[in-house]
Amino acid sequence: MSGFTIHRLDQRPDLIDRVYEVDSTWPEFMLRDPVANALYWQVAPAFPHLCVVATDDRDAVVAAGRALAFTLDLPSRGVLPDGGLDRVTIWAFNDKLKGQTPDIASAVEISIGRARQGTGLSHRMVAALREAARAAGLSKLVAPVRPNAKHQFPHLPMSEYITMTREDRLPVDPWLRVHVRAGGRILRPAPASMVMVGSLAQWREWTGLPFDRSGDVIVPGALVPVHCDIEHDHAVYVEPNVWVEHDLS
Image 1 (cartoon, rainbow, N blue to C red):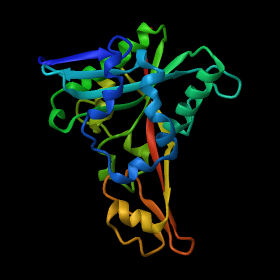
Image 2 (cartoon, rainbow, N blue to C red):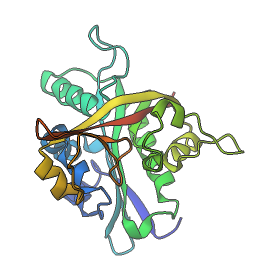
Image 3 (spheres, helix red, strand yellow):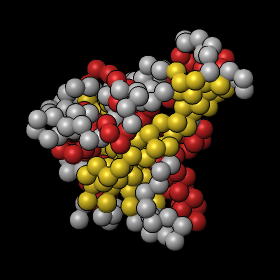
Image 4 (tube, rainbow, N blue to C red):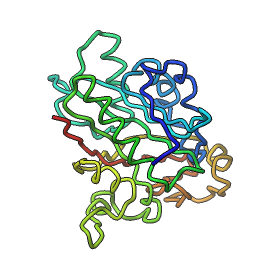
């Protein structure tokens, strides 16, 4: 695809603060994860060698990919966590503070600008993250993928959704398909990858929905139902993601 250049941020440090210039397509409630709000803004400065940005011919930022590194081979870890995105983010920053040598990289976000979606840029961004992890001497890149069509099937368990394939045996989900085509292997769900909690007033503000009955609420953009508790005045959204592994060896 012509007209775009992908830069690794340790090679273009002037772009580190510009990763947020990509048009956000996140629903409002997705911006309320406390781990994300505490740590995600630090990913690009802390791990610039694992982060990439795409710019167009005018040097406008049109896509960004962020990844971090942590040590999986520890007695208390050993397997990719059910806590998905939030848990590996905490691991990565704890390891960095301790000076722990990482043995694996994890993508945390690939963001494509609204005007550039559907152009094939996502494939190039995944490839760039793979190459950045390989250049860092890491043999694997994993990703707690947020399947971008799962919101159309909110009641379907993620374990069933990831088995849905097209006639060509590729996943029906577009984001999972991008990763598989890039060489990724779908492992299993991360059932509690992100958690958003708020009062009912907050959820009404975030979604425009009434949240006036206890039970499951279908929220546009949510991958599974949000649980509403009228008596205790709160609602909880626990987002499942999908662990995908890229072997770089």
